[in-house]
Length: 455
Image (cartoon, rainbow, N blue to C red; front, side, top):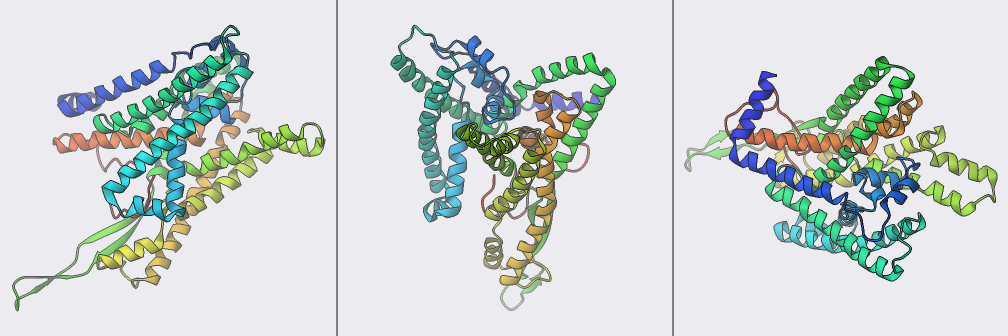
């Protein structure tokens, strides 16, 4: 405890770090405040009542989790930062498939990044207009619109407010990145997820005390601790490939002395794909309920199977979900980790992997290692994605069970590690002790040779 208090004092002593933390907290407060400002003409009580029985794991429940409950309140930040995330994913995927975007991302440096940012912002506005229209139609279908308001005025005014809210949230995230601590966009998502945790935890306490007593609740907390610990290990897990730079000659002409080249390494992450495989798999798993709605009662057997695939606690759903996460982990890792690019880079830098010939053998070696280390990472992601359903079987309420795995847990762990890594770097630069007694705190950005796209 004394060590922790001393670390907090050291953080407060560093003026720049203190100002950045206070600025970040102020921006997060503004963002959370916007989650309680309701759109004009929306009856938020009627909307919350209509959505109270919604499954926390379906698409709308997931969006509500990421926005910290603003979606079900009809707030000005109802769409949160999600349109920007969608636009960023689209641009990143285009960077793999379209040469123009690939050139902007990899070869044009700072000017290319600025163009990418501009395109992403414009795409965010377009996506917000589409999603905002759908959201207003959804609110209207729930009977949460004041009947005295003109429908045209309601739609036109609120589509502008929703778009402005998303752009403002995007601006807040960029300001945190520039003047605060941590990645702003990620922190906005994290604060939305954390906002739903207290209510879920209180509900779980009441649930377990009424049924099983305090012992089961303590067991759940211990299980959650070990799940978080395992997630941290996988997120930070790296397979280091040592590389050797060629010898160089030092000295005057005629008296050169050969000096051994420097050593470095290529960090291949166990979970290079991050949270993206779970997001893609969830997008696929939202299709069965849509198809079942189209079929109606025409085919009872087919409709029953589709509804089973729409129930996140059912066995068919979890088997298919696990399989999709494993497949998408390999697909997305293949897009992110380009062995050919690594081999070409090493060749240009006159460096090599000890015992491996440059060129094609280096490419095949990196590809083989990537495939091998992705296997345990993909299985862990698959298990993590279905863990909430397993936990729910033991009587944990749905809201709290979602924090045992899936997208929410991975985002929380990744963002917290990144933020703590930045804080520790400030402490070490000022000759203070870091946040850990030994070793080094690692976030998503690790040292070593970094090549290609990254999340």
